[in-house]
Image (cartoon, rainbow, N blue to C red; front, top):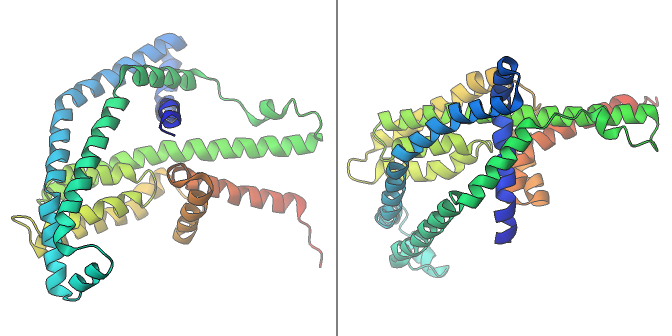
Length: 326
């Protein structure tokens, strides 16, 4: 499985990078006309500044992540002490399920250090020369590949009637449009949210605030996922460590609530619009359904565009084939 993931990761990375940067590439190509020169200019104007930024900020980020993980056992102990004082029966409940209260810090230390080593391995793998070269090759390939229309894909399906081929071509074009549009717009939304949450958490004095907030925003590429992962880390950090207080915890929640409000009523409507046609109930159901069908990561990543396409496809089939009978 690890070998398969190692082989697929550069392809997936190249595909999503191409989705994100294709509008910029087309803009440069419009002026330069030459595809090869356009790619070189785009790589120079994007990856050179990004490499400089990572070179200067990478060590700081890694240090912050290491300190955050190292602080984990003490933070877990403070949280559990608070729970024990607030809920006295918690100690006996943990003993009944076979998790001794006194060992929770040791458990975190054990798995936290394992996670840190695993994270280091992933960073080394992703920054490896071979993986980087393969990712860039697939990125350039997907970037320069001409977009194929549904009509070209179904043109060889001569066993289908003309109207059936036309209908199938229309649905292929719709699916590609939904997929590409969703991820391009969602990536922009995630970057805006990352800066917004990171700045807000930093301003209210949350330890590692910008790092946690930025990760929260970026992880919202899967809607709601960033909040589910990062809030359980941010809230204890706001209340328990030295300098923590109920006021700071409330301020972190206020920043998060303002971010949710701006996301729901300004950022996403302006950038994404209502292209998915899914409410919160539909989003949650999509996560469960596609997560079961395609696996946790891939299913949650593709849940929204796949569900949106299913809605559009059902409406098209209903309009084309369903007829009133009464």
